[in-house]
Structure formats: C-alpha cells, structure tokens
Amino acid sequence: MGLHAKAAESLSPGDDGGPLPNGTTPKASDGRIASKRPRNGLRTIVKYQRVLSQRYFDAAGFEGRTVGLDADGSKQKTAGK
Image (cartoon, rainbow, N blue to C red; front, side):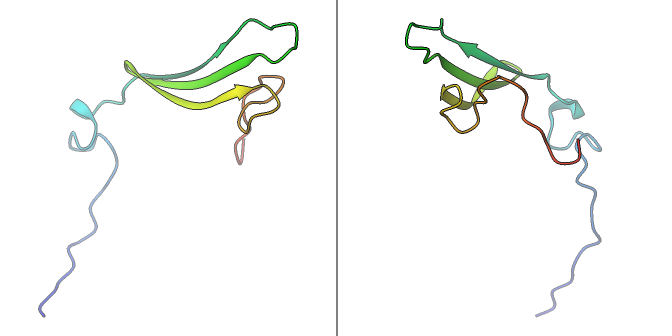
C-alpha cells in the first residue's frame, strides 16, 4: 500500500499559534450561583465555568443531594493534589 508514518509532531498549544487564538490561553474561571435558603432548607445551586464570555454549566440542583454539589460547597479534590 505504500503507507508511511510522519514523524511525531508537537501538540502543545501555542507552539505555532495552533489550536488557541494567537497562541494564547483564554481567561477562565469558575463559580457558583445559589438561591436564598427557603424554610425547607433546599437551596438550589448552579456550578459553572466561564471561558472568555462563554459559560459552561457543570452541575445544578440541591446541596448534598446532587452529584457534583457538596453540602459544604468546598472545591472538589483532584488526584495528586
């Protein structure tokens, strides 16, 4: 068939302006929006991340009752940190 593999190329962002605009990393942040706590105690929480002006929702629901929403609102632990 005559197939030949090319040498491995670097996939690091920003090497040649690659996948990111102008080779820069966009600003990103995370946050939580919470409703006022009602009498029944079930406060609605929305966790999100923002990249530039785009908001991405991670989880929404009740504290301690929804996967991804801890009752104490602490940050999620990651492997090795």
